[in-house]
Image (cartoon, rainbow, N blue to C red; front, side, top):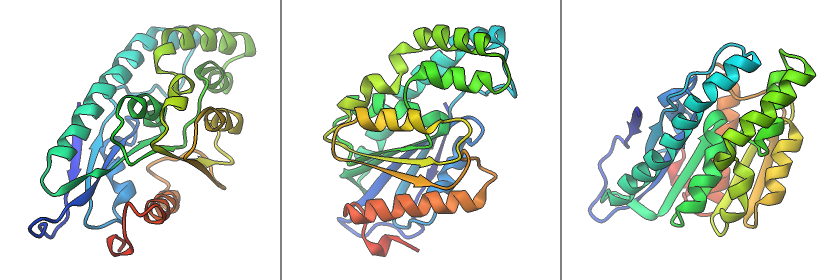
Length: 246
């Protein structure tokens, strides 16, 4: 499992404790996900890679063949994230009460599972994610395949990945604050899937809708908009002060 680390340029003053942020993303974004929060300063950021590399397109056969690999890769992220969170807490320059978990795209569905197990998070963020793996899989398969193959893939895929379905864990994220950022034009995560997860989650929670397609590392403008939403939210909840903004 690869990871990237971003540390403040200025060393911490004696006794100073900074917020810590763990970022998870899909293979396409990889450790470049660390760029999502580079407009925050005086913060320690750790980014985890997701080892599975998605194919350009799928058939039912190739998808089901890949499901075991997808499952292994996702399950590997869970203990890796827990270890990374513990690393942040053990740092003498990180405030263990101000640890934030952010999951982007392929990393977003794992946020509820990890947050449900780790009760020490100050905030958990799902960036362009949703719930109900069966309909999510069917929706994305249907973009290139017919209705029957997509439904078959959704049923079988969701059964094999059932332990990871964010809907199963969304209600257990509380009392950790949940932030969801989603796109109204997202071609991969339908609005109904994002709203299903939001309904399942308990307070405190917030969802922010942006006029955009799915997040990609190539869309720098969207990256800045998402970063701004995250920054404003964590400042509003007093996890960061305005002095942590560039």
